[in-house]
Length: 316
Ligand code: UFG
Image (cartoon, rainbow, N blue to C red; front, side):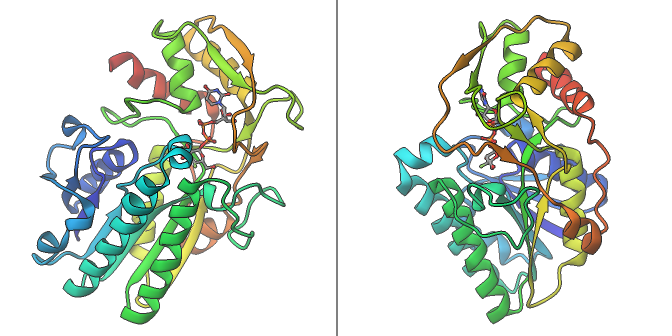
């Protein structure tokens, strides 16, 4: 297939672009480099620098599908500067959907998020769970999901939204290197590398066994496999939504301990106040993705996820 990958210079987008190329697809990366890196665009992909909301002239070339990764994704920033998320995420996605409709682009795979659910009533979280996002980032992704549903029904688009839980790990030269890093595993590895003094654990009085928050870490390569399955299974006029997680939760303390084992560094950790908007436990039920897409996450062992992230962090 000829595929447009928006955000293909970012973490999840570049891994996906690399895996799509390996699977024999033709890949065009569209990225404005606001948070991505030009050198993260995989060899073999054509790179176009630009905004995903301006994809019309590119799509006029004729594409079999779009994988839309480009987005703003900092929860804290989304609360301070909501316009950046409503215009930057929702506005851009609407422009992209219009361009796809106008050019007859048949398939879309969209990067949605567990943040669409907010504080869950039940864990593991199924796709049928209520969606009450607790931050603007999650709300912007939910709004896009709703728009995709209407465009699919009205214009025959074959669409899939994938709701990622906590993406981690790396693939070859492609990994996480945000200028502003907020995610737990890369921060802990920065401590191991001596780039930070310590890691702050946001709260140790949560209603969990060791008092720290529990998350579901999914390897970025497993995530990429799910995107390829989504492309194959997408049906015209239908919008399907799938949660993607490994199905087991690890606490902040367990993550730090695993990083100590993998890196052999002491990694000092202190307790800090809770971070606003953090739910205590987020674990996915990925049953629907397993049953309908045949997705089976292969790299669910936390130590190997951390090892891959560590190998990447040491090189970059
Ligand atoms: N944490 C710390 N210290 C840190 C960083 C994080 O204790 O320095 C904790 C957080 O409080 C949280 C856990 O580690 O309990 C994981 O935090 P991350 O920031 O790595 O990830 P989140 O669970 O907040 O967010 C992830 C994605 C978001 C997405 C969200 C959906 O990164 O984009 O899942 O649930 F919105």
